[in-house]
Length: 308
Image 1 (cartoon, rainbow, N blue to C red):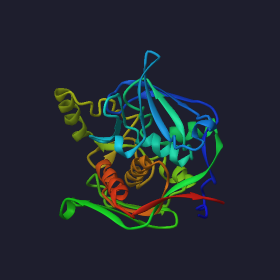
Image 2: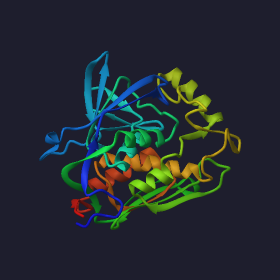
Image 3: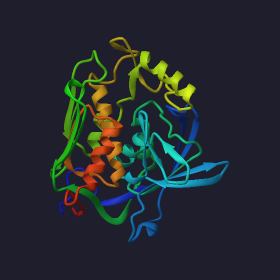
Image 4: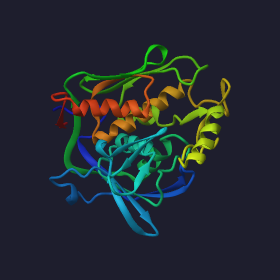
C-alpha cells in the first residue's frame, strides 16, 4: 500500500529515554514517568507496541499493554488493566502523543497509578518526545485500514451522541461538540497527520465547569473514587459561568480537545487509522464503543503495511 502523506515509511521508537514528572488529574498523586526505547531486535517478527510498566520502590508490580481488550471504564478518562495486575489511568494524552510522534514501540514506566496530566494538554509530551528524537525500526509502517462503515449511537434528541468510521485513503476526523453549554457549537474537520496533530490539536487542554467539578470531587472522596482530585487552574481550562479562567488557547479549544482524546483512545488499536471518523459529542466511552465495534465487525478492517 502507498504510504499516506505526512507519515514515516518505517515504524519507530525513541532515540533515548524520556523522563517527566507531574501529578495526576484524578488521583492528585505525583508520578514519575520514564519512557524507554525498544531494542530493534525485540520487535523483529512480533508486535510489541506500547507497554506500561508499574513500579513501586524500584520493584516492578506488573505491566499492561495498550490494547482495547485491557481498557476499563472509568469516569472522565481511559484506564488499562489486566485481569490480575495494577492499572494505569488517564493514558489518552500520552497515547495520542506517541502515535502522533510515530513512536510505535516503547515501554512506559511509572511509579503511580495515573499518568501525569501536566498542563492538561498533549503539548508537553510532544515537546519531550521530539527533544528525545526518534529512530526508525526495520518494519514498514502499519495502518489499520477501514473497509466497511461502522457506527455507534447513544441517547435521543439533543443529548444524542453519534460516531461513525468509514473507509478513506488517509486518517481524517470530523468532530462536532456543544459541551459545555453556553459556548455554542464547535467543529473541527481535518486530515490527521503528525504535523497536524502537533500544530492544531496538541495544545488543547482538558476542561470543565467548576460548579460540577467540586461536587464530583466530594462524591468521589465519599465513595472512594479518585475523581478530579488533582484538578487545578494550571492543568485545566476551568469554566466559571460562560467564561474560562485565563481565557482559551483557541476559540474552539473544547472541540480540539475532544479530537485529542479521540485520537488517544483510538490509538489503543496499535496503529493509525486509514479511515474517516465522524463524531458528534464524543466521550471516552463512545470512543471505545466505536473502536470495539470496528474491531468486532467481520470484514470491517484489515492491517496493511505502507511503503513509500
